[in-house]
Length: 372
Image (cartoon, rainbow, N blue to C red; front, side):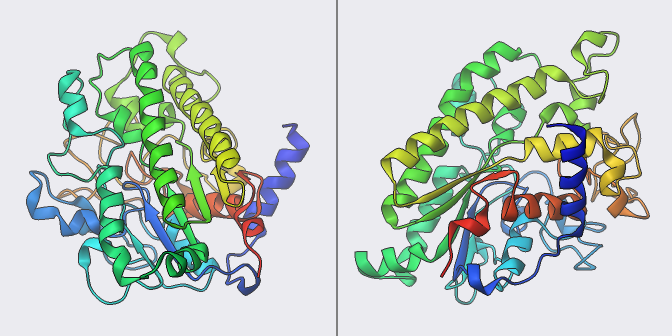
């Protein structure tokens, strides 16, 4: 993409408001994933984990909700901006099991993976896999448990889910994070087809249940995450870094490879389900634009430095994470790309959502997928 085009796209992303769009309405949203779109399920499971759900502590949620809301950010997530766009309430976490889910449910859980925990153990890959069943397969099972309360007959379900927006993804990063730091790139890449096959199988099941519009996000440039840069550092070996961005190129190569497999799987599903709208949502490219040209998006702070953290080159240390005692946030999160070392700020999520709704980073753009 040439610089002039990129500048125009940057200006459009900054200027476009997110507001209800009745002419492109969905009646409900159902999301599956991990902490990038978790709106509280992790907190509801908190007592069953050995570590606390840090998103239940300040300063999480300070920008928009002005309190911890179960979201791993300073404010709203992509699913929140999508709900606003279509005039829907913010998605309730399914595990809360309170009230009606007629307008959607969130099954995403921080720490979720595509691969089952037994896979990591069998391959000696685990460095902290959750003991709970919160995989994408488990989330699909929760959806099936909820389904009878939403529709009864096959026709009713196809009609109801045909008016719904499904989001399946933003989960696979955790599969790679859970691999030991000694696992080399080639080995991690060898597991990518299995991970993508599981995601594709989940999408297929949802389509068979009646889903008509499914957003399938790729994964972010993992080599630009402060947590990865800190824990998997290659100090002294400049060949591991992209000298223009400061990101670890080997991990970004893994992200690109994964996304290429996922896009291929999406294209194959489009052939099998020609009446469905299966949208590939690219998160890699917009995040790389934020890293390369932060000033264009208002990210006046260093793009690889964390807003909420403590210590180290990137303001991130594993023993002093956001939400821990004595760890504070920056004064103006909107000037930061990264919130807590793993996830992004509300401002970053807003720009990404805009690029998925209208393009250019969703194929097709979400607003083109359904018109009444």
